[in-house]
Image (cartoon, rainbow, N blue to C red; front, top):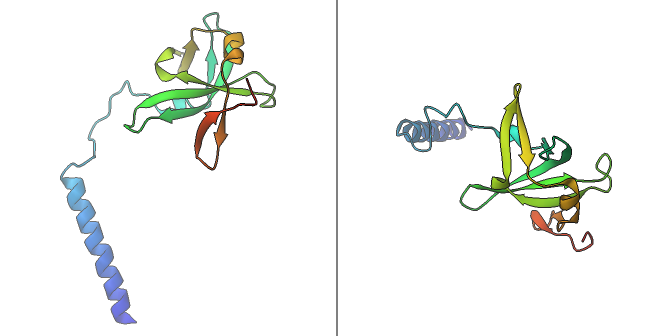
Length: 137
């Protein structure tokens, strides 16, 4: 039994040493981040407004492409307290962000009505992704 404990401890120490060596070599570790960087929480579950400052929906998901770049957002529009809401996809670069007070303010140059007419999407848990919602045209 004692040899199993020493073997486990040796494995942990060797793994830790390998991790420390990788970390010290600077692989994928940053020493600084840009002060202008935004966090996902500045976008995810945040309201989005039109040009006249009317709320047109909430960002329900942030989609990342295979290269790690943010590609699109899913905006929940319409409905009441989530019931009857329609999810639409909007290109990430279409959203303009600014600051209002200490909060990130997100704006889209469209109307709530235009989003309600846009093709809908639904989350497919078996595919773990968003797919066109054929029932919500």
